[in-house]
Length: 135
Image 1 (tube, rainbow, N blue to C red):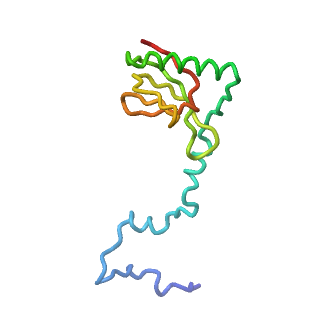
Image 2 (cartoon, one colour):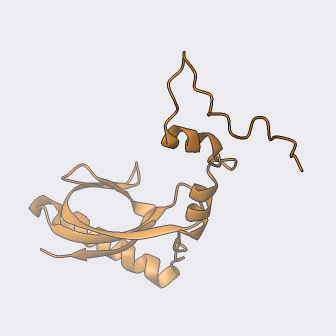
Image 3 (cartoon, rainbow, N blue to C red):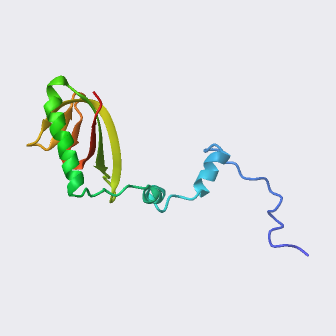
């Protein structure tokens, strides 16, 4: 019984005279899946990233932070070293994180609402959770 392709089944594989043979790597790349959902993996990773909720200070805690800032203001001529914990809102989703920085305070700018450090960092006063005067 003869098959449908018996006349061509044993012919040699055609080779182009004009184009070189494609490497297996390049040939496989033609058939590899494409990123149909661009950014999907980044979105999943971002969703899984945890943030902290801002702790709302009550009246007594606000008074405590204000007292610490007043004491700091009095000690400014001596360039005190402090440790300040403050809330940093997340740029991409609700919540944020608490950071603690240590260093010398240059000034407290009540008008701008920031604590200026000697290393040029500015900490928003409204985000301050605690101030510990080290020296």
